[in-house]
View 1 (cartoon, one colour):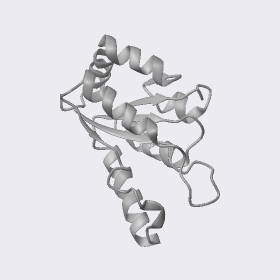
View 2 (cartoon, one colour):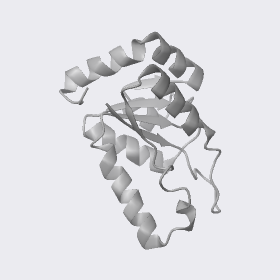
View 3 (cartoon, helix red, strand yellow):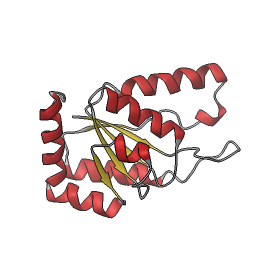
View 4 (cartoon, helix red, strand yellow):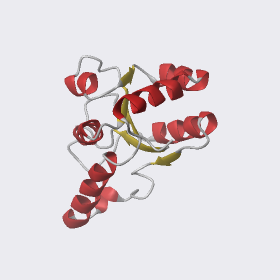
Length: 151
């Protein structure tokens, strides 16, 4: 199973600065521990210096990541506050019938609410469902409904 790890990077910052990215390692570790067969793609891992990219390079990376979101099996979006880039990634996965999982307290936000198959209000609730095996079963059921996935 291929998972795209989406999540807030720049958010609403006006300058060339990123939000704390520690959630990425935490999610990767959790996924590898409980679903060792998954392949996790973290867009930041290969683009740590993305804030310094030329406009041409940044556009290429941005558009490529959005294409990837429609090709993976699952997109996990960490959205503690609004994130335009993450919203686009969620939309691309959603419209391609990929499983979209949001980890966000923004449960009334329309992107979170209507472009996610599953919503967890925090990492703790996500981890509990992952550790119990319930998350894997929910993913499989959603994939069966849409006829997608490469399990």
